Length: 253
Image (tube, rainbow, N blue to C red; front, side, top):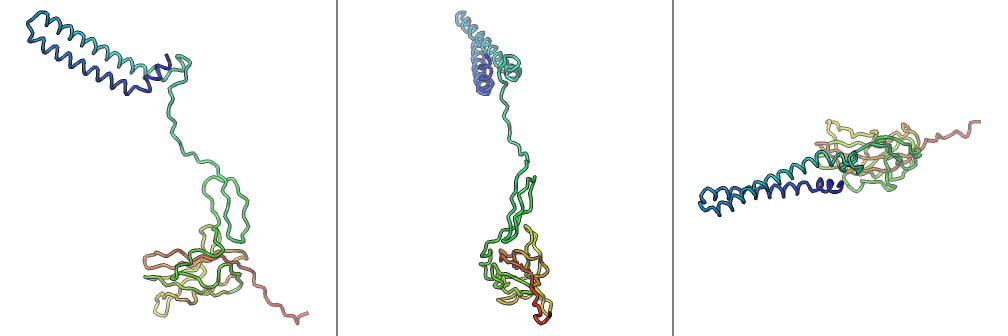
């Protein structure tokens, strides 16, 4: 019995369609018999048409009763199979839900920086920007750093050289990274005597006092902007900053 109720529940659409089609066919036969009965004078033919009409009425009521039984079964029996027969209830589809949960997010470090121990955190966390040993994004000749070179060890005041010359040039900046996308500007393009920003072609982009940063490994990049704020992929280099060792006077005791 429970299996039959579940089968009816699973195939209810087709059952309704078949019953409605059969009921419509019987209505047509009933209408045809009733129409012919009006114009029939022979007793035998009238009796046959009356039987056909009565059969049509019976079948219509039968199919209507079956549809009502299917409706009652799906509405009252199928959802309560466990209570009525000790049978598992009608399965209800479970939609997947996005439930945020704790995730372990390892930190990526710049070359030379110590890696923090991964901690259990919920939600996005800042990550250190990895930089390839040979740098990245420096293939575009109009926005590239030629000095220092990738992996250079810097101390004190250094001169940054390169090219910043793109179409519709506006200005450039040289930045150093600390954590993630936290970039600190250390050099900006300077206007000429007339107040215009001029591109640089294989020349000095600016000077940078590395003593303003703690010793360690960083990423240095050049970003060249045009007049509408667009820029090619920045030229990014890994560098190392060390403390400048002051010379000592050997003559002092």
